[in-house]
Length: 219
Length: 219
Image (cartoon, rainbow over all chains, first blue to last red; front, side):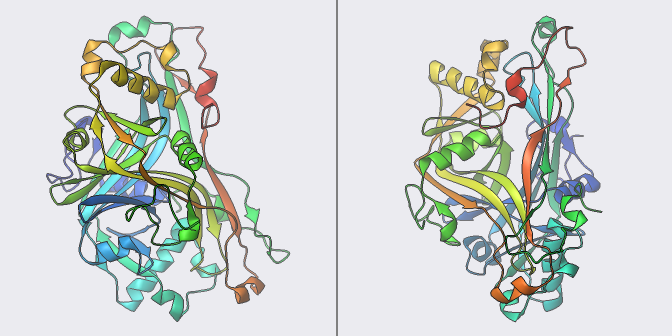
């Protein structure tokens, strides 16, 4: 499809519009499967791109950080943000160098974030960050105390202006290249878990939560 | 260590300086293991963060794209860039919600890219992109023709101003929380390959290159 979600001049795909997907469920699925986003903002004249965790609630993305962090200060002061989540799904090996590619799903969100100051929303966002890492984790761990709540700034970014881009499937070679005796295809890639490593100071008799190694996105 | 590589006001780590690593080999290892970077630039007043492939040659990073792409046009016109590569190594499950974290290695490079117009450097950069996906791939595939060379703009970004940030190891809980009966530890994460999927139009008798599923970074 040619148009992106809530298409604007910024989200309309300039290149490869055939890879655009205009479907909010696709946007949500990417955001829920990913673990980190890359947050872009402008500091002075310079773009800055920082990897960080996040959480989605409905049509809203939450970011967090130390109140003293450059990202929190910039976004909290109203600097425009671009938040990108990319899932890498495969290496695409073509018969020509030119047609090599990758399979991926990416979401790009533009907007101005809002500092979250209302205590209940702030707390629910923190719950979401924790449960985004491992479903249900929040209810099984020590909850934040007043000092910790104060040490965690939360920002909300509405999913009003977003685009999704997806590449799937085999390489697309030039017609005459299909006759070449060169292996072509896809090497699937996935972010996979290994066996959990218990903390050296773990009390005896405890087992890791099943959700810690469950496939994402969590239900 | 407190200082980052070629420390400047932009690369000096404001938060968590204990996670800074001032070692060029660490920078190179992250760039060589990663497959995609997130390129940040400013378009009008707006930050834009785009995932894309890349390749490293010595102390230089190469990016590429269609000459018509927004990223290539902006960076080619001298817009400052921030290129970030993040490798996610694990989920860090603490006993408190507050101390949940992730293990990761990230590299952030700042600079102004240079359009690569000299034919030999342009061609060597294209070789590097292909071999970055699969080591040695370039020599086994059809080389770019004149049309394809013209359709691929290449940008060079020197690794002069870069920072590396790494978190490893178990959670760090508050002293009193170690007595809580809560599982804590690390769930290791890695980008892993599945068995290659041959192209539906593959000629018989061809096998995928061994390097396609070899651990990264490639030798």
